[in-house]
Length: 171
Image (cartoon, rainbow, N blue to C red; front, side, top):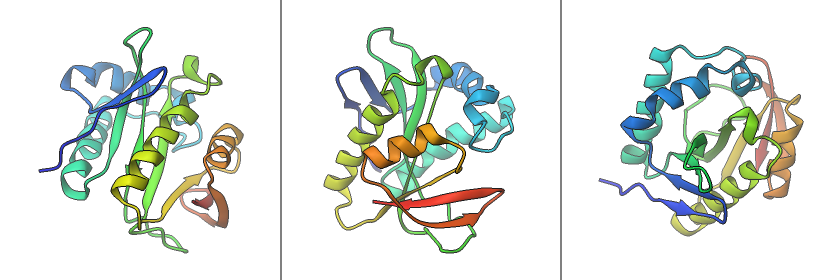
């Protein structure tokens, strides 16, 4: 069984999800501003539970996954970030890559938290999966996430449609 890491940055603790996180986790994924560029549809409590189980389970099957993002100053859960391999059905395929993703609550936007969290995760991935390509998919209207990806060395390599237009980036 894979040990899920805890990664500390200057302002954040990236840690395994806890059962006690669930109500806040469900509130995060029910927020229309959080899902605006991801699916556009707020998640039900039931779907949030499924997501929480999936992102935790990915660690055990794949050796990577998502971590909860806790703000050190407040101890509050403010989002999540990590890697997944969702076996998405679009071309060009990104199957087999470390697909980076992140989502934060609106009060955490614009504070550099996404960049800080994903930078730490990229560093972790370079150490643990040095030969594995990293990718991400971003809605072309999501300028904030495109800036985060660019700061972290991701570059556009394709555009495609996956439940709407997306930009494929690779690092």
